Length: 124
Image 1 (spheres, rainbow, N blue to C red):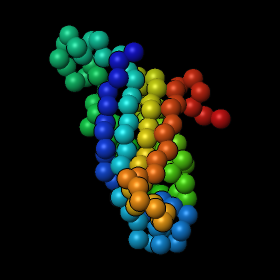
Image 2 (cartoon, helix red, strand yellow):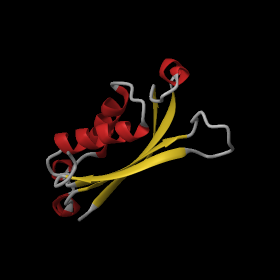
Image 3 (cartoon, rainbow, N blue to C red):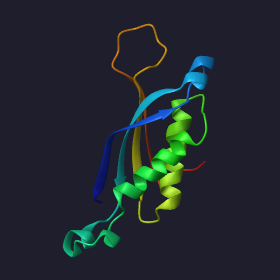
């Protein structure tokens, strides 16, 4: 299966368990790989024969920012659900949500959650 990647998509959102995270918000970064057969597009050079990363980016942004979640695990799942629901040709997504401003007293680059969901097993 072929893979299309969106790397370090920067989004501002209000996810977190602390009141200040819900009130002030913070930056998050998302890496997303989605799996789709792009053989036809490789030969046709036609946008209609692939799943546009611009359209997927809009879906990710909407799913990630439309509501506030306590956990980045839940935010990642919301993104997976939206992408798999809206794009019938995508068979699997791998998503990493990075939280560089996590309220942890430590020196770190980011905290993150990574999930992988497919059409076969993405909902309980």
